Length: 442
Image (cartoon, rainbow, N blue to C red; front, side, top):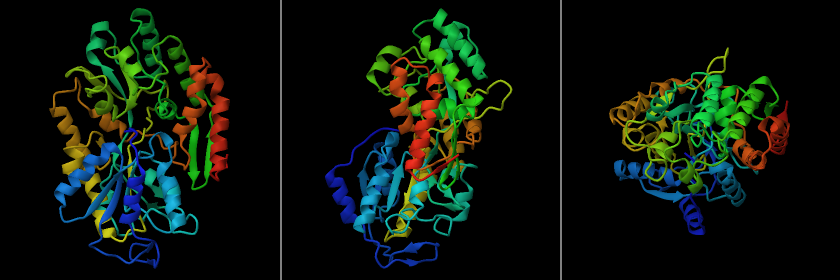
């Protein structure tokens, strides 16, 4: 989930004090250069505000491990704070945290590379540091954003596959069926605009809009084909169909250009969200949240990602979060113990975590727990299936698609411009940002 926190000077100072430098590194048994190890050294862990619970759960289960917890924004909404701070530590030659959580799935692209003559920030995890059995138990494909040229540099916290959330009570009341295709979804949106004005079927006001609608339409906006190569073509049929659909629904008022995390959204649409395509974490962050829509028990249903007519159904992925171990850590044993715990242990992933776990055994238990709660109006099997339907044609480059969308598209849509007409401008913005980051654009 993407909730912005803060990191002050005191937090940075704590980090600088809590970590050792990178001097005296030598290639160890894990396949990367590492400093002299001290199994009793405290570890410094960076988390966003939503992952403080993960650190608390670890502390409770591992009282013998000394841990300093620092909160920061988690690089939310493409802020790039994780990378910026690591670059500062690289120049200083010290200060790196031992473990970092990021809301972004593109950090492995830069964290796996040498910077300023320093070893890559991210430790290689599949060279023996994390047990193979643990890595193999993650949901198939879930570690793809963490993998660069065959080496795994991070562990996924949770999956953020997009599904179709809907209010079953409202659908039943209005006599509507759950759409199974995007064409049916658009037609329903047009019906709602005429028959129940004021109700909505989605939103486009958040920076992850392209990951929900365009990734789910197989739009080739982000085809990462190598460490420094990307294919960008946003004027294909797959891109145009998503844009045209959204233009129609924006114009008739059923898909507003308002962020789901604003007071304006809650004021206008509480009790009026008929359905909403969105990631797995919407369940706890928006719907079953007293501070947000607070949908009553027994109303929220989940449907499979719609398919485009004549095409196979795929879904996008909206964040999900990643955990990194620093290659500069003086206590790799404790750092690995932490990331393995927070991604696999029932104490956090099943009992506390709000999102769908990337670790398959935990995900199975998490689903059962959610279904047994009685909160949902349907089972959650659509969520399970969607976890393996994430389209592989959208990659995880260094640059943030969310930041590009927020800067280029959101203001233009607010100004009344058509998304279909804006596609060339969006494509140019992506290409320019990719080239700034050293990518060869095809």
